[in-house]
Every structure is written in structure tokens, then in C-alpha cells.
Image 1 (cartoon, rainbow, N blue to C red):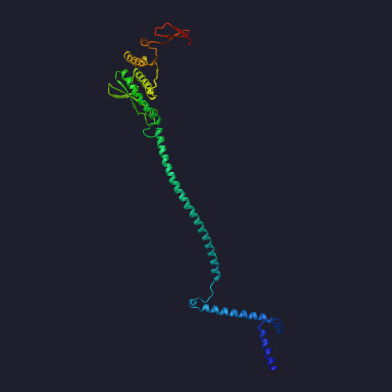
Image 2 (image 1 turned 180 degrees about the horizontal axis):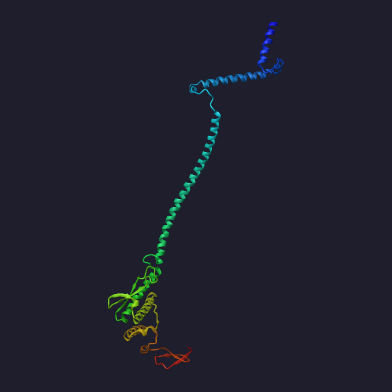
Length: 314
């Protein structure tokens, strides 16, 4: 018994030296209940089983070439987190890009439809602009619609006027419509030239003498009256007044002009002449003569030799 006690004491001393306890009393005080020790035994057994399982996994042929040192998983984990964040941001940007792509496709479709509609409207606008420019005389032949209509009327007027002018000039002159002076000018489409039968050439109306100009003007005035009557459904113009111009005619041309006016008067029209030419008195059956005086002008009404004067203030 003494020998066993000595052996136990030596073992206790060795165990205490290798433990954190100073004395056997301290070790006894640290002892736990049996249930707690059983739990520790179970945990140890589970740990040992897990170690065996991990060793079996590491002993697999696919892991035979693994390095001995443990890899730096912290750096890899940080890289994974960083890349995962980048992946998340990329997915968000991809989603935004998909949305932007859909919007761009919608806008492109809308733009194509709008462009097609705009092209149609531009074509229509160009057609309308071309018509407007043509009507306003801003495009060839540089004659506005208004002047084109007036030119058509003037052509009719010239047709009637030439019937009178031929008689008054013994067949020498004819009026011709011309568009010279066009290109948007003031006289575009309304120009007149004179065909001289003596030379067979056309020339400017400004080259006519004073008497010839009066004859042409008188013929145009009569042509206007005939044209208005023709376009008004045959409604006649029963009165025509002519102011001056007879003094520029020589006796022969004056005779021809008065003969034409007599033909008009015989056709039922009233022709009023305003003139100071004394030779006309023989051809005028009735009228009003203005006689100037110191105290005013007197009007003599009736025939050319009517003695029925009366005075009005000048």
C-alpha cells in the first residue's frame, strides 16, 4: 500500500506539473459533473469523426495534387466579394441598357414614321409652293395668275380693238399681245406691240405718233366696251365718253375716227366727246359748249349753234 501511494503521489505531481492547476485541491475543485463530461466526450468523438471524414475527402484522387500550404482564402474571399459587387452592378447596368434599348427602338420607330409623314408633307408643301410661285409670277414664265387672267382678257380686247383700228388706220396697224418685259416685271404678260402692215414688222407702241397713239387708245377703249359686253352676257354699254386726243389727228385720220364713232352711234350707243377741236362741230349734233368769260364760264346747251346759253361760276 505504501508503494502504491508513493507511485500515485509521483503521478499526481507529474500531472499537476503538466496542468494549469497548482495543487490537487485546485484540480478537484475544477472537476465538473458527469453529464458535462459526457457532453465533452460526445463532442470529442464527433470531432474525431469529422477529422476522419475530412481526411477521407482529402485522400480522394482528384485532390492528390493539392499543395501542402493552406491557400489564402481571405484574399480570394475579398476578391469574390468585390467581383460579386461588380457583377451586381453589371447586371443593373445591363438591365438599364435593355430598357434604354427598348426606348431607343420605340423612338427610332416613331422617328421613321415621323420622317415618312414629314416627307409626304414636304412633297405636298413643295407642290403647293410651286403652284404659289407660279401663281405669283415667281417661276417661269414669270407671269402671275392675275396677270395671266388679265392677259387673256387683253387678248380678247385686242381682237375687238383691231377691228376698229384696222378701219381707222386704213388697214395699216394691228395690236399684238406680247410677254416681253416679263420675268416678274410690272408689265409681265400685259405688253403690247404694233404690227405695221407697211413694213411687215412689229414695233413698240411708243414709236407711234401722237395721232396714231390716240387711234390705238380709242380702238382699245372700244375693244374694252365690246369685251365687257361679250363677257357680261350681251349686256350693252349704251354710253361712251372720250376725252381729248382729236387735236393730234390730221384731217384724214380725224375723218376715219369720226366715221367709226358714227357707226357706233348708229348702232344705238350714245357717244360723248370732250374736245376743243373746232372741226368736230360739224360732226356733233348736240352738246354742251363751255364759253369762258371775265365773270365766269357760260355753258351753251343744245346744237352746235344753239342760242341757249347760261352762266355758272368758274
